[in-house]
Length: 219
Image (cartoon, rainbow, N blue to C red; front, side):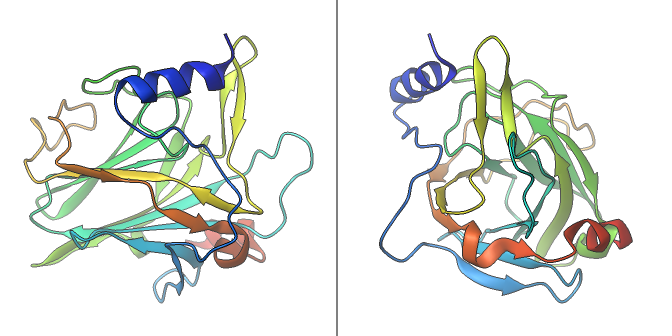
């Protein structure tokens, strides 16, 4: 069975949509945003809970396998227990970025889900947290991180899925108000989400950055 079929069946079983990416003729859910802290251009979406997810990618994408670094920025109210982002647009079988507050710090955990339970860690997606765009105040926390391994996932046996840098893409988020079990530990377990969504991000028109590698190296 192909990787995409496994992901689709698992997502259907969980009651989740399983679009990795689609082309649309209507307006996306995201808006363009230029971050004053990092200087990066993002495709940005804010949920009804007031949590904002932002994605930045390079302007020049490699031909062939399209492996490239990405930047994710998450800004959330301080009383959010955890916030998650799914790069493939569904819960299972794609890189998940989970973040939560821990005092004056923000913790990031790389995960992947294989079912309807707390997802295990996912070493194939590696992150570098950017201090310039990461902070906590009395009302909100924010984290900015460079991801290597979030634009392409899978393996030779089951096949690979790629983040499409040219068209509007359906990505996904989830969050819970209840905190994780061990906030200081990136491998902490946590409970089920309170809500989820599948917004359409316009990566091709909003998220691309010229001199991307040079900009993130300076951060």
